[in-house]
Amino acid sequence: MSISISERAAKRIHEIREEQNVGSDTPLRVSVVSGGCSGLTYDLDFDSDKAITDQDKQFEEHGVKVVVDMRSFLYLAGTNLDYSDGLTGQGFHFHNPNAVRSCSCGESFSL
Image (cartoon, rainbow, N blue to C red; front, side, top):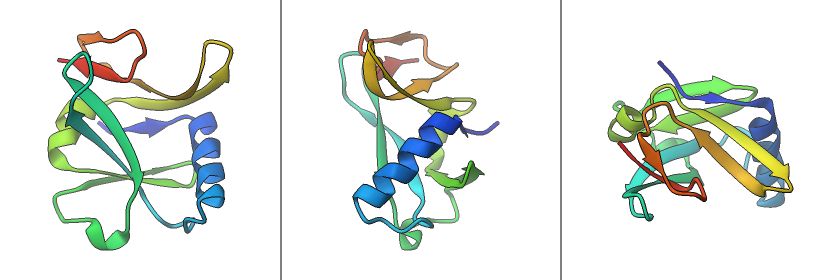
């Protein structure tokens, strides 16, 4: 199992890299942290290659390298990261098959 990224999400990630002057080879770290109204929340940040450990899972899709720590990967296996800029809300959306419940804004979940 892996974490997949839609073409729309990859395009937006590349745009953000340009806006923030982040190198195109800088990986995107995806993690799960405690918080939110459902107990767990997603976190996205650009990460330096120096912060990647042997225990991290690494994936690449549409030119975006994704790094996930092993604890977060247990929550995120099989997840698809998408991006929407429609009328119902702009931002990244996680389609997580492991989530039993999520809040109405989609930013937190529980297992």
